[in-house]
Image 1 (cartoon, rainbow, N blue to C red):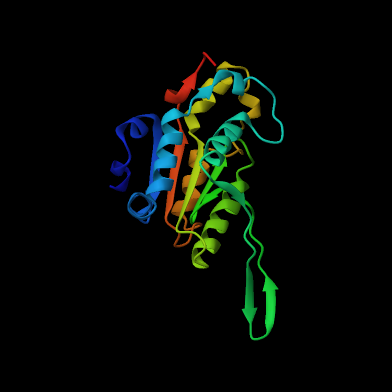
Image 2 (cartoon, rainbow, N blue to C red):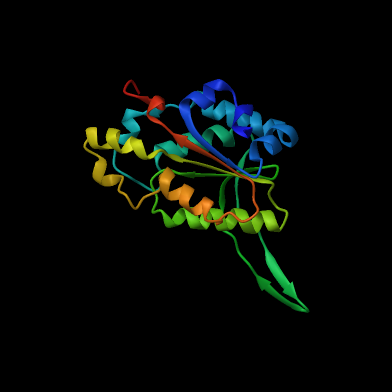
Length: 196
């Protein structure tokens, strides 16, 4: 199984799912981006203080992940895409990718409405078909973190219709990512810290 290419430290702390040899592609053809993702996952900590504050435009979880990768040369990227039929050119806009570097697209879905997964997977499918990306990566939360949210009195802010692992897996298994190799990391309770 390709996820065995990941260090044990990452395997121990995350719920990991892979489709279409994403780990082999990343580790073989995109060594710098692979290492960036491993380093990100190794240093990530889910701080209690991030969960006890109200929402805003972007969660502190997403900010933390974005900032780590932006410091490694990743960027938020919107692709200008179009379809040409005979002489007619039709714009085919894509949604911005949270973090992009050298044909690797990474999305963070922490506490959005679950249709955001449809948007991400459709984006991966389209960009892969257009040969703009080689692998799509999604980082989201595991379902069991709901117990921690409930314990902190924040359970209502993280409802069943928001982004979490089981909502994502059913979409990928149903074919929503098309032919795009996909790697998914679920943030588990092992990453939770009450000390920050």
